[in-house]
Image 1 (tube, rainbow, N blue to C red):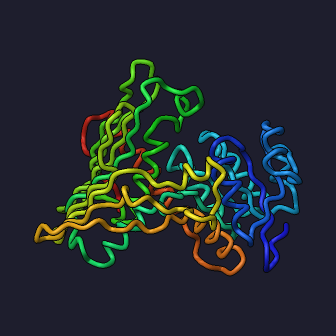
Image 2 (image 1 turned 90 degrees about the vertical axis):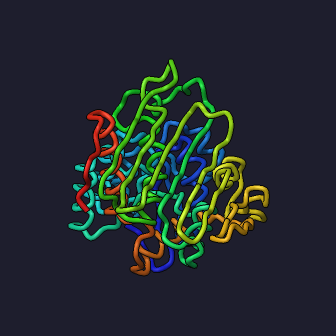
Length: 348
């Protein structure tokens, strides 16, 4: 296994949207990582996008002694099995979000990584969204005071379900595991685990086979955190609405990095992670004075920079397995709340 003091040889399993649009370019943008192999059936696309990279299959990639880091960007149901195989083969592992389908599997993988002395992280890239970084700065600066109401949404207009595994009844499918994982992770970064959760999780579109809408209410003492997503919203609502006893911050529009990556953009290029001024959030202070706050530049590249630093320098991981496991705990509690139509307490 090659993990020199300078570069970490990396293999990627999966070359769908997550692998091709996010992981491969972001791995390539980190100078301390070297993408040497990809396991996927999309051989022609890989050969075009990544000339010189070995195209293989998952077992061969995991068992390749030259590879130190395995990145898993496959459908959710395969995350745990592939990660366990890679950890038992002595590899560091990154898994695309969500970590696993169940909290039980998340705990088992976390324990295995600890037992083997290996790194295990999950790609919660939206910790480095420009609006989330901007909000975090406002909170650190105290401009909002004590936050009492935090609301975040991922809404879109997609009245006809797409084909693909995310729209099936397979475990780990649906919008709560998909978009909800991002929103929950951000809330936990800011506020930690809630005391309890109340949730409504539903399929709303006539052709939907799995949840495409959710509304979560996370309770933290006086504070309330509301997280939601819909596939039937043609008109934009705010992505973030955060209210405290010192002021409010309301933000429309989503981070630009996903669109930039899908268009072939890369970190370091002009305009990378830079939101247009029209998307800047509006801050209102306790006296009612308003100003637009310049959005910080998004930094998805920070994730793999952090992974490289953890592997080569012993730095903390950018996203720990325990943190990612808490996201799955909240998702499971939300589904249980929706089924039983009651509030579910969480052990903290």
